[in-house]
Image (cartoon, rainbow, N blue to C red; front, side, top):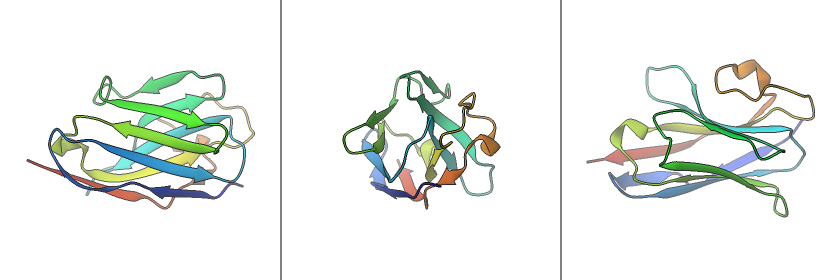
Length: 123
């Protein structure tokens, strides 16, 4: 298992940016960011494989960028032009060493999760 420690959340106004970080202490084939708004299900935001393949939910495409710094073993989510509908608790997730399809829809693919960080966007 991998420990994931998140940081970077906060309160911003619409149009501003935040960058979330997720420091890991182990290897994963698939990395992902999920978010959960109050009263709603946890949904996938973006995924990244060790091959460099990425996917994004249509709601964030063009505004968010997922990346990984191999030297620091840190996953990032750059969030630009934030909107009120982006308000949620954001969680990073790792599949581990097991091969997965690295999707945004099956939470069972992810073995390890960060503690969550709150992002609040007002306008």
